[in-house]
Length: 147
Image 1 (tube, helix red, strand yellow):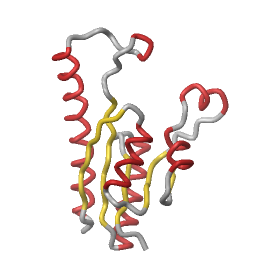
Image 2: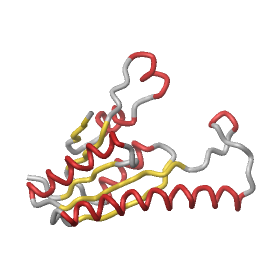
Image 3: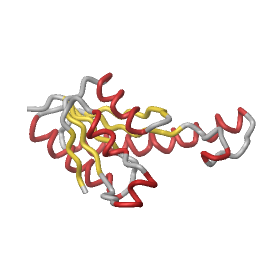
């Protein structure tokens, strides 16, 4: 059925549900798993939430974020391996999470994306946006969304 499943995680309990489901599905299908976390770049503009920092400080902050993300995807990889699922841990940097996720799925030749959704509605969704909605509307492969 599926050969390569990409699961997006950010280390939260909500994304853990997606991770566990993706591992179980990969085991059932005999598929490989790609555990992915997208790390934002440090915001450069004040209106994006950035504080003016020296280049070395920005690099240090981004490295810290990437290191923390690596710990999360490594844990997913180990959990998958413990269930007999071949797995890869991947951390990518990107401005827009959904775009980076879709690019990684294409680059890794995945045939399914598994991710969680907070299920925000109304004004909260409008103000915060929806990475999941963007993935759903722009993906060329199936997407399994868990809540």
